[in-house]
Every structure is written in C-alpha cells, then in structure tokens.
Amino acid sequence: MTESSQRRHPLLALTDEELEFVMRMVMASGSLKELARAYGVSYPTIRARLNRLIARLEVIVKGRPISPMAELLGNLVERGELSLGGARSVLKLHRKENRPTKEA
Image (cartoon, one colour):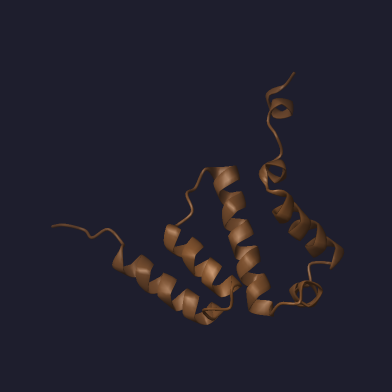
C-alpha cells in the first residue's frame, strides 16, 4: 500500500452536515445566492458558513489552527447577530492588535 492510499481524503474528515453543504453547493453550481435560497438564509450567512468550512479544511489539510476569534465571529454572522462586514472589521482589528511587536 502506498503512502497516498493510506491517507484519507480531507473531505472525509468533515461532518455529515459539512458534507451536505458541500454537496448542495456543487449541485447549485457554486452559486452562493442559489444555496442561500435553498437553505432559506441570507447570502452573508452562506458566505460565513463557507468561510468556516474553508478554515476547517485548511486545518485538516495544512494543520493551520483556526483562530478562536474568527470562529466566534463566523458563528455570530451565521446566526444573524453580526453583519459580515462588521465581522471582517472586528477580525482585522483583532489581528492588528494581536500582531507580535518587534523589539529593538
């Protein structure tokens, strides 16, 4: 057995709900507007959900950790408690404030 055949495909590490989302997105030809209609939610909600799915796949594929702040903001956008633009602004400020400083 080769090394590549021993590794599982990253999509197999997703939850059933995440796989359903991926399938429905493919069936909608990648149209987030159509997907939002199918789920009965707003476009920003679907966009936030897709962003969270992408972040999760990055963790699986690259081992890159998900920012707890990004996860929290994504949840708030998905629940309609925060706009996508507001979440982006907060995350940008959070990353700026938490950037390591260079010492002389």
